[in-house]
Length: 386
Image (cartoon, rainbow, N blue to C red; front, side, top):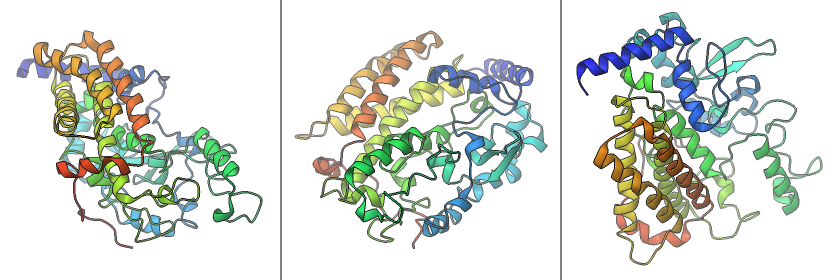
């Protein structure tokens, strides 16, 4: 892309942002691709509903060890501090028309680098850090998941005495209320990619890229690891309740879960990048970033994984990669074309469906994947030790 073209793209993006408020243009493009409503307010509404944010203080009574792990993580500390201390923050703000005083209190940046909370009269408050609800979704309100997720039956019922019927009802209630549970890996992993892939065209054109990359297993088992609810050590690499045979089949283990999370991360990377590419308005740094992610994830799944497996057949991954192959071939032959938005979104929908189905596996039948040496091995940098 020529310097003149890049300057033109930035100029158009900056003009759009000034006219519509802080980064609303980028949010609108993303919202259209997701088929969700576009908010008309200064700070674009995050996927997390700020009016339902309770804050991590509501979690600490039952999840003290998880809170300790979180407080030691970059999510709780460095993520928000970057908005106020990193020189690049001022550079991005200037290019996007954001006042320096608004970066950490009234800008799109806070949807990923902090947690937005709105009080009963509508005033916006920024909670420093990427908190519990930023990942597990807002929990408050009479019909929120906070009050329901740890009720195991009539008053006084302990978790191990919960009936199968009540467990099913509780799970359905919490998921309807919006909880991103560890048992629902697709939702939880997808939330990570919503921020760890820069999905705003104007922001990417301002210079904000994906940093050192994002591979889910490496990050999830690194300094954000906090699966200590029932067993601080044995379940440190896997959500404790996922391995609990009380309401699941016996035999689930961390090795199987790790296989699932690795492949799921690649599928969701593929889906997220395809949806993001569909919002691009021109060939640019943003579209180049997304094309590179698509080609990398597709190559790993279609060539490094499926072609190397001798006995194990993974139907969901086959379905996903076959759907994206047409996109990859067209990108190789013709490059990015904004008129191909429908092609990108249709492929993303197929990948998303396949990813949701794959997330239900326990991974025990995927031992052959271990022989390919694709899954990162620990110990992972910065992993919290309870």
